[in-house]
Length: 381
Image (cartoon, rainbow, N blue to C red; front, side, top):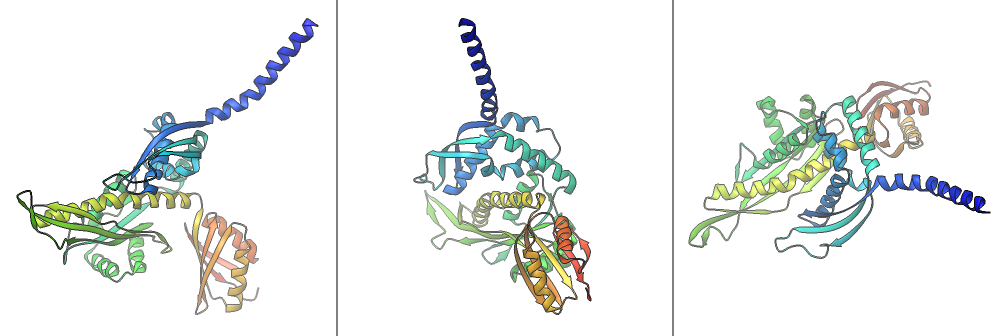
């Protein structure tokens, strides 16, 4: 009887260990951290908390990658997906009201998947090796009162942060005088198509454009604490597009920031610099999220088909909608040409293969780039 009890006990312990091992592995993967996120809005503070939770939970892994090529770009691309690695989150404090200066500080408890971070890190690293770093053109016009500035403060802030994050930029010195005049006109008339054409000439996959202004406060100049002071408000409206399709990536209306100084020009520059510090991280994070979608094959693909009759155009739209990876199809038809925007969960190359299969050789594809497919409709089939 004693032998039976001992054997049963050993068996119970072994079974318990077997069942405990996967649970322990799961527990090693999930890490609970408490962090405080800060930002100019509640949403910004929560996003900051999630990024900090990722960095804390996977700190040793991230540090081990710090000497690798494109470390900063990979890190920030992964952090842009922070919400996807968080299994659960609990707001502990700070979500009711902002501080006296209008900022938010939210304390959160997050359960983070380390394995998800490591897997995504590997995916981003491999895709960057295949595709290379994206190149960006920034052209933001800047005005103080009624005078356009030759050296835009907001643009400088945006460019510096993009460079810090590992992006490649079009050198402003390379933009010819004629291109700069065209860019200025395009920004003034809100013509992103013209800017896209110029950006493509310089090899930029993404371009950022808009206008930043510094406007004098009507109650100034006036004396403060025995000294005359000038006050300006800086504001910017910035849009980001992809160059190959003209797709709008993000549109950010700036939040007005003040600048108060003894000289009017200095106050205006201070206001614009504060605006630049606010808007540059928003632009960068939007680009990082977008670039991750591009690398994973998600997002918009443009299919441009020539020599197609309207009836065949209608059939083509239906055939495209039937492809499993296609989520949405929007199209325009003009002069026997179809310009079709396809929202898909695959790369342009894979989508081109699916289109050929679906259309049974009725399309002759002549060119496949990162996000554009060019084809001609074949008559008689």
